[in-house]
Length: 182
Image 1 (cartoon, rainbow, N blue to C red):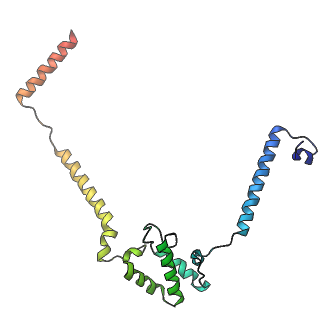
Image 2 (image 1 turned 90 degrees about the vertical axis):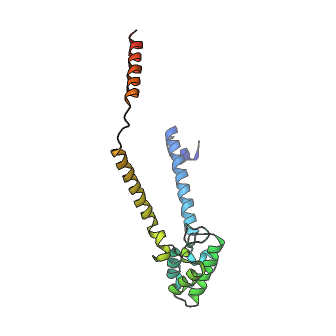
């Protein structure tokens, strides 16, 4: 007898035993998840790199590192990147915040040092025009080429055969028909 049968006053069928084992497994899984969730401490963005940042800067810090690009990963924000340069940049930002610099001053410092590429949304200015409008220009050029090609195909006249070539085709067709008829 297993422990389920002794706990209940009647014996369980094989199907009921299987269901009871599944329930027991599911309850254990839920208990483990709850225990892990209860012991996990919330990690603030500033604590990711092991340096404490006063709570008053936390919101500004999170917002700023979400707006800046990791120069190594290039497709991630500083907040998402685990590259060493990203860690260094986050430390630099924290130090500048604690020193009392504004977000604008910090951003200007990083742009002066690394260029507009450090900004996840670079500003529209003459040097970034191709970045902002280049895809639309390429799309317009592609549509224009497609329209011109389609129009040219519509106007094209089929090539005409000379009288001699026309006679050769007729002779070949006649021979083909005679070959089928026999």
